[in-house]
Length: 277
Image (cartoon, rainbow, N blue to C red; front, side):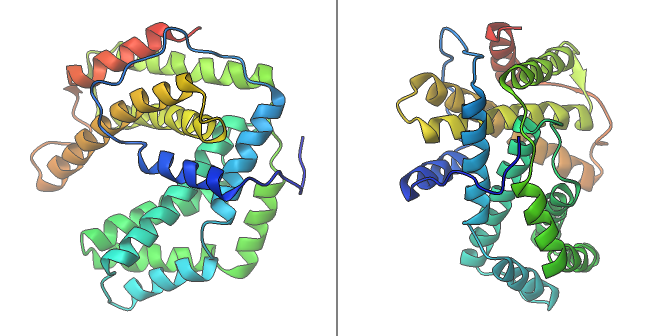
């Protein structure tokens, strides 16, 4: 199904999603899983979830404001704390909608240009954080092209005309992702890329329950799952930062395998074991 018209949600619902996304890597080792993980999700629910994620992105910022931040850095300036937060929140909206496209679309893939924009925003952020002038220029210029008015209008059209999956296909996709997670953590050691792939699946699961809990704040299971997975996501994020730092310092190659810490492996195993496959 596709449509130019998508349901619009209240500012309160959008604010709940903003808060959930802010907390999607919050550490809470006391977080626990619900007794049963519900797989059912109606086609109407899928449409509501995508519509909320689309609105979260569309209403969250202006293209001109993002370009202003990028060009400010390209001109050799340092972003203020307020500007860094602004950039961080815009990028978070991109990432959440990218997850939504992977989750809810018929093809379970994000639009190519939109996906590349999200990737370039991440590389540009890494560049200005580490004062890497070469990458600031490369990704800043790429973002200026990809965020130009003509390209932007094409991307917006594609996002609004995304064909969504049905309930059966959506369940199958989620189960497939959990099987990938199951296979990955069966390995005693993981390379940096393998570790990052595991985190991407965890992050996508977090985004699903973040959206669900934002639309239905009374859904205690969704809140519980969001909190449990956010803790794993946060731990994995901290560990990935360490791996990148080790790579940059020459201490350890990113492609070298290493054991996953028990405080990460055990909760992932709990989640996979409880998930209906």
